[in-house]
Length: 241
Image 1 (cartoon, one colour):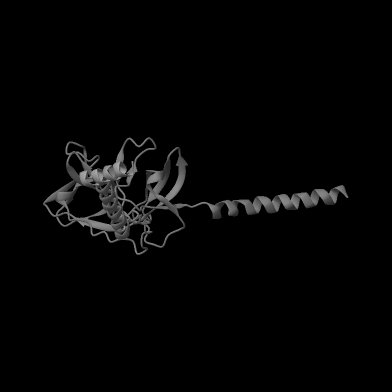
Image 2 (cartoon, rainbow, N blue to C red):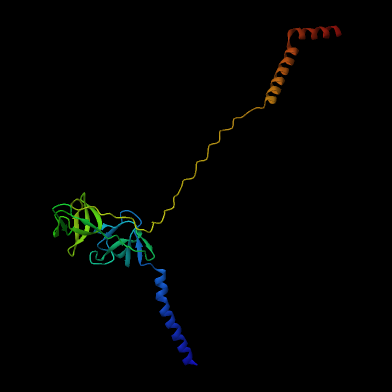
């Protein structure tokens, strides 16, 4: 009997261990979408160094979490667009279900001058890693404004680095085919029209009644106290006596 119970418990434990990873995976998301402007990819989890601005409406793959950051990868990892990793703030992206390809735009920029230097960092004094000649194409990842100059983060000749934007053509980035979620529009409550202050109105009948009473009172007072009336009353009194 004890042996049967142990076998049953082992079977239940095996089923639980087998099912739980799938349940946990179904409840979590391995992707995040860039739904806002100016979402940066950082080179480390402390957010000290910005790599470039990620393209809005596209996706990054979540590889892990560190404090308030996601560790993510960008690109699909092919020959011209190798996958890179970095960090994004968790509140700057929106976790989502696995997206529809393309996950990130694969655009190239073309050198429009005699040459364009791909540098290690986005400054004109930074080390030049490689030089691309006129009409050569570089794989584009994102842009960054540094010290008043716009730079593109690119891949060329097995090298990742920065090229000045005005030495190459601008990338033609179209929005992802999946529409961005619409944000709720909060409309302020309509102002209620102010009701005109009610003016006190005395009915016409009441006015006439008041006037009549006043006139009657004045008439009676005059009738009683006029000199002629007083004299007449005195004469009558004297005659009676």
